[in-house]
Image (cartoon, rainbow, N blue to C red; front, side):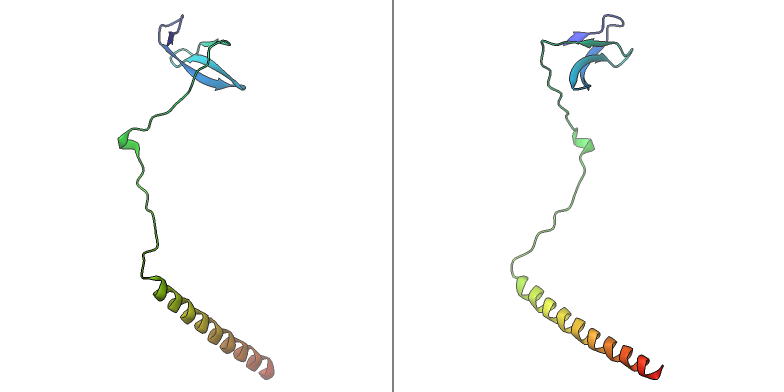
Length: 94
């Protein structure tokens, strides 16, 4: 841990042009350290966590889903037949 020689505040490692330099957040003073490796890590506090939802398939519902797929396939086929009949009927009347 190092402190700024100008203002005495804590200097933090920052990535700049493929290098890690120490920078004072208060006055902006930068110090390049070539022989020391710094690891930048971030910690997210509990109050900043984002709640997300996870959707997973329940067991026993695969049968219902396959039935739903079959019904949708039949509905789609009937729709296409009806649509093509209406299109051919409108072309004949023109």
